[in-house]
Length: 250
Image 1 (cartoon, rainbow, N blue to C red):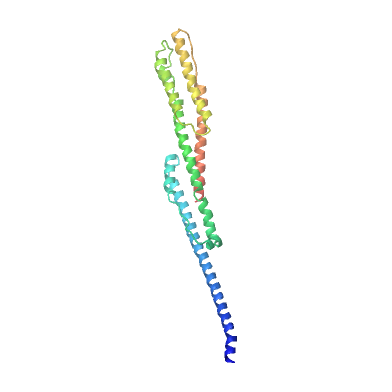
Image 2: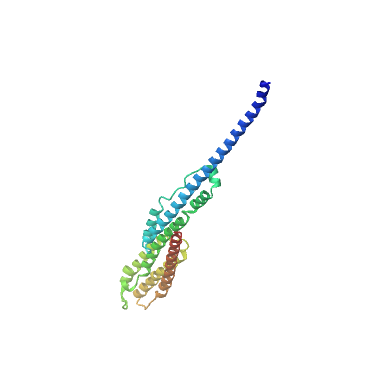
């Protein structure tokens, strides 16, 4: 009779023990998941704080740079963005169930975007600055600097000074990289210089033939200068806009 009672109790005890074990595993699993979420939350929050501090540092570095010097802005940008914060890894469960960590993932994916855009704009501006400086140097040429402003009785100065000066300016300018979309402007400037070369050649021939001849190139040069100034203003505006976009993210 005792043996039979024991036999009846034993399955009940086994069932209770199994139930207790399953319950314990469930509690343990819940705790582990909670810990994973908490860990992901902490990692995500740390990254968001680091990203905010990073933006502030970059913004301050750019503000300290001379806004009129593209190279200085570019150097400040490159130095300040050299070591962006990195989001540490976490468990798949924590990644999936932590809203803060998911936000951090989104922030990391877009953090450097504005700075890369600014970098591209600055690189384009550097090319533009070189082009603009070279073009202005060409358009500052004056024929009277080589032949004076008196009536010419000899073609010597025209052939030995004026024409070579403008040809050299034309050829030097031709070696300058043309910014994207500014081929027409480059052609306008080159054509203005070539016009002087052509007219000066005709002038020299007429002087040698004792024939009168005169020409004016001021309108062509002014048209080219106006177009160049418009382009320079656009470049400056693009840089200012790109810089402001980055600063505004602070």
